[in-house]
Image 1 (cartoon, rainbow, N blue to C red):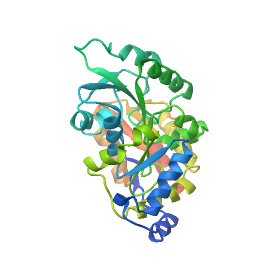
Image 2 (cartoon, rainbow, N blue to C red; image 1 turned 30 degrees about the vertical axis):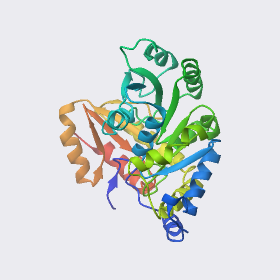
Image 3 (tube, rainbow, N blue to C red; image 1 turned 135 degrees about the vertical axis):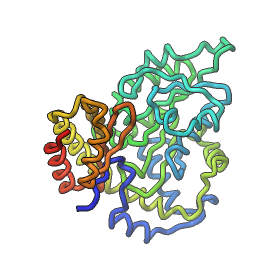
Image 4 (cartoon, rainbow, N blue to C red; image 1 turned 90 degrees about the vertical axis):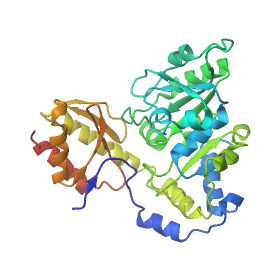
Length: 342
């Protein structure tokens, strides 16, 4: 059996159907907005979320960074959870690209509440502190183990933003996982957020690409910001075709990834060497060994079986199920976990 790679859902390769879509794509120059595939993908996602416009980006980090730039001015501040991707995993881009600082909130598994947002807002007339202008949420949460926001809490956060004249951005890198897990309509999210970024190369399995979706007013300058960040692309309709194929064929199957993640969590929960398994809602499993000193031996034992997972540091281990993780691989992995001794 080939390697079982559970480090991330970004390690997948295009399916045969996706490859056919890529090869058969009609393309043009997207910098001129003449690529029919890209235009179709953007229109499809804007319509799906009930929003005005969408713009294709090479990466999710770039889409998030463009959103922050669109919503803020230098010396302002955004509010996000302490584990937020925009703060932890985008290379300090918020400060470098937009000149803004982050007010970090001590949320629950990467999720913050309306009350926490309200108490984190700096007084707008107090010129000693940065002006709060943006709230960034992440759904599902990466470092929080694939946790899903309750839509009602997002509605309460939106109300706080409206009261204090703040914009609201969603880092929806794994939003489709949340939509499937909670059986939600994407248009409900389109009604609440000013901008939403969605990733096509994680659970949906494309080689690359994210899309920023938003209202006409905020998206007016999105293509200019993308150019400044170096994100203009040419015949990228090949990748847009992969995105359209994924949206048509790979969304509902995310439920399989969620079920397998739950199976893994259950098996880890009965293992003698595991100290804690965090709650699993989607395709991410985060767990801790009883003895942090056993990490090296644990990872070595998995490597002997040609299995790879992520070590997130501070004793935190992560498993992510995905499109290329088959049922045969799943049964082997469960067997290894059950028989492993430390």
